[in-house]
Length: 237
Image (cartoon, rainbow, N blue to C red):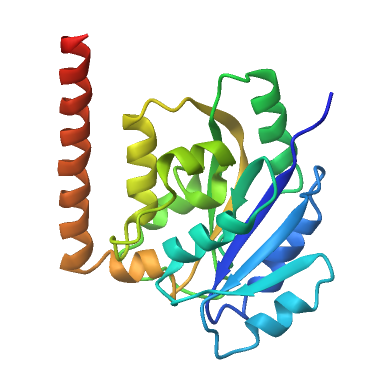
């Protein structure tokens, strides 16, 4: 039996503070990935130098610098693996993350993608950023987040990747579309992702703005429209 190969994608822009830990958590996996692709969005710090210091890491320059969704799409486009994993440059995986997810997809070939549970990790010596609920640090959660994801590359191709017209919520949109398109999800019931909470988290900074709220309303409307369209097709068949 030929085992599936994994391509790991990391999008980064000025992420020198945490990038090394993220890359090391990928390279130390019990199920080593075929490749690690770092997509740099025009960093002005040492991010590229850090990425290129790892012989097993391939660093490419993002064309157009259109945000993380576009960077993920560009990384996926050149990936050679059967399966795609994504890790934010300030998060890290536990060593068994890829192995557990690959084994799940092998055992249940009807599944299209997998996620794990997550634990938030507050940066040592720092207060919780505004808008973040401290009680979230006390337990773990199912992670509908790219960093917890392992998906078949064919699924990304069918979904045409992440939409780049959402400024903040392209990841939320991706999971909503995956559900509405009836792709099958498997969940590994263990904490295999640690998401660092710090004052530069894009999601937490932007979550305080009306822009984020407008995008969520737009996402919900699109999801409802897709569900109505699916029901209409079912009624006609």
